Image 1 (spheres, rainbow, N blue to C red):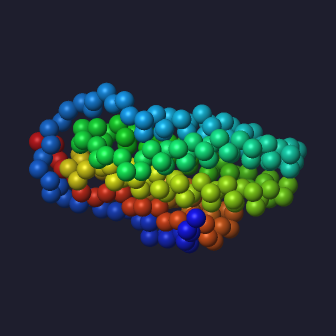
Image 2: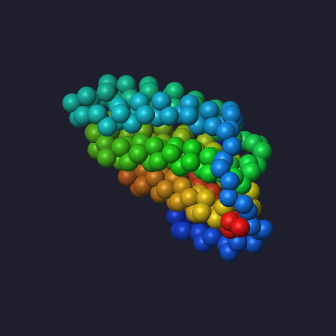
Image 3: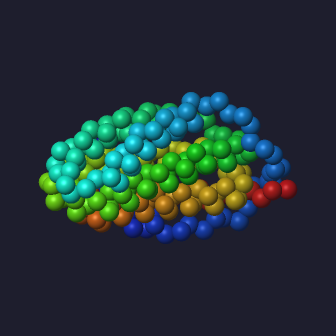
Length: 207
């Protein structure tokens, strides 16, 4: 996996461009039956399980406790890889449906950020029982596909997406980048985490 040192510039807020596309008519999103959205939902159960396990870890659990958590990482990793595949080369979505895809991404990013935060809080325990390097490997292996998912989902956003939804995309980009940057600092990860993509800036106002 190609890696690079985290670029601090991705943490900066990107200004939304002034609406340059023809205005769009407000309309409710369609009822979408999309394998991509199903793949997003498939990540949630193993992610929730891992968050719970990390949260409950105690020093007394020792190395065996840390290794038990690591075994629960694989289901999350495989589901993230499946999502990355589903997001690759997906067709651009209609402006009215952008809210559906960004809502799914926003929720997922929030949960992954929670996992990173839990790992940060338990860093002393993981390192104390000799499992720090395992956690570093898990974080870096998750970062690559996570960045790819975000990049691919951002390419689905059309240039005439509603400006308020583009604002959501920028918030998602900042949160995702910050979560992995925080973990990199706590676990002293100097390589293996790619730069996360910037959110789109072009948008259209409602008519």
